[in-house]
Structure formats: structure tokens, C-alpha cells
Length: 212
Image (tube, rainbow, N blue to C red; front, side, top):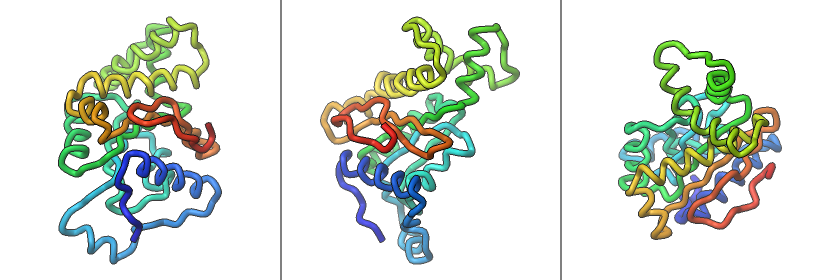
């Protein structure tokens, strides 16, 4: 059993260290045994909440080398935000006492690609996929307005916008960051390398993250 990180900085350090182990091929696979399962049966106490893209290549516990009960994970395509996402994150920080919120984006994101296609070619997505595309489109437009055209720059813009939107829409989370009890970090994940790099930080000094 590993010791639960108690501060936002410690929580981020734990994720960074886990990602380094994953990248190097030396994961510890912590907190994944029968003892841990039994310990968690009465209740959970994760140390971080992770809002990530639903992409199947972004399994948070694997790429950050964590185990049962370590992360409270919320995933949507393109890490878009709705009331249920905001409520889940506020639950994690207020009830479960998570001290770190991570927004995890990645390269080759289908939601961003679809939003780019909608902007460039007017290609409308079918069904409720259109709602996801519409929520990502402001990030694409903002990147274009800033003269950014590379996929990596547009994805980073979307990660930053998601962090901004979290803090703009959740007064609870914004207050926690302002008080210093919680931090919000945007990370960009490289699929081929397996590295997570810092894109934006709120409530902490920017750390030296693997792949930065």
C-alpha cells in the first residue's frame, strides 16, 4: 500500500513519477491486489480527479501507474464539460478531498479533428456527436484566431480552454484553487511515447513533467 499524497504538489509528483515508470517500462502496478480491494470496500479516498478524453488509449491508471482507489476518473470524448462532469469533479474535491484536478488531452484526438473538419469544410457530425464537436469548436476557432494551425497547438489550446472553463463554471473549484487547497493542471499526452507534458497549471508552479 502506498501513502496517499496530501497536497496538490505531492499528488502531481505521484502522477509524474508514475508516468515516468510507465514510459520506462518499469511500472510498479501499486494498489492492485486483494488486500487493497478489501481495504477500499468501506469507502474510497482518491488523491486526484482526472478529467480525460474517452479515447481507449488514455487509461489513466495505466499511463500514470496507479491502482484501485487512487484516481477519481471522469472521461468524455474530447474532455468536454457538461453539468454532470462539473458535479462529478466538485464531488471529488469536496466530498472525497481530492487536492488535484487534471485535464488530460492527447494528440490525434478524434473530437478535435472533427471540430477542425467542421470549421474547415462545414462537415456536420451526426446525432449527439454534433454536441461534442460544437463544444470543441471554440477551441479550434481560438487557435486559428491566434494564428495556430498545427494539431499540437490546437490540442494544447483546447486543454487550456477546458481548464479555463472548469474554473469559470465551477465557483466551488475556483474557490478551492484560490485558497490554495486544490490545483488544476492541464496535461498533454503523446500516444506514441507515452509521455505526459505540462500545458497549463493553476494553483501551482509549473513542474518539470516528463516529455516537456
